[in-house]
Length: 92
Image (cartoon, rainbow, N blue to C red; front, side, top):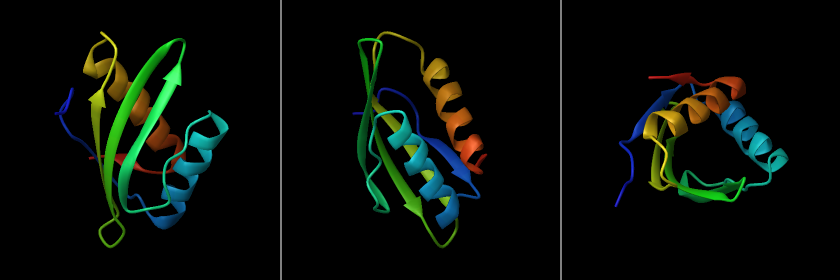
């Protein structure tokens, strides 16, 4: 069950997706090299778990936070938006 609503991104090309994966690796988490999957982020004693679905053809990415600490979804979304935008994607 999702902890937050689905967040949607556009312009997520192959290059942008690989950039997202590289940024994740730099920050200590692994985004699978698949069009859909799960990954977790642990920082400052907090764990956040995500599920994602990426459509290569349309360049869209759907991201769902499925587990989070007691912080608001908007806080987590702002961080996710920043990472996607830094990689070259756009908020839908």
